[in-house]
Length: 102
Image (cartoon, rainbow, N blue to C red; front, side, top):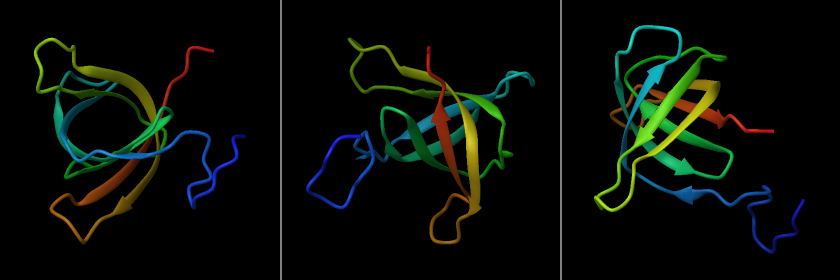
């Protein structure tokens, strides 16, 4: 693991990224749900949503860019934690771990 001189001791730095996103649950219908990212790293995402997910759900997340030269960011991942969120408009905070190609 990399050595860091700051409080964040993870292998990948989390970036504070507050932007709207869409997600769908894999294996269910193609309904797109709305959410807002809170932070993003190379290995995962913390997002808020009014739609409740279950730990272990497999989802596809899409974050659009404001620049048409860049494709939207799309990733598949697994829900690893869902917590109630009373402090913002989204009712749930959802932690997602991105799938790796290993």
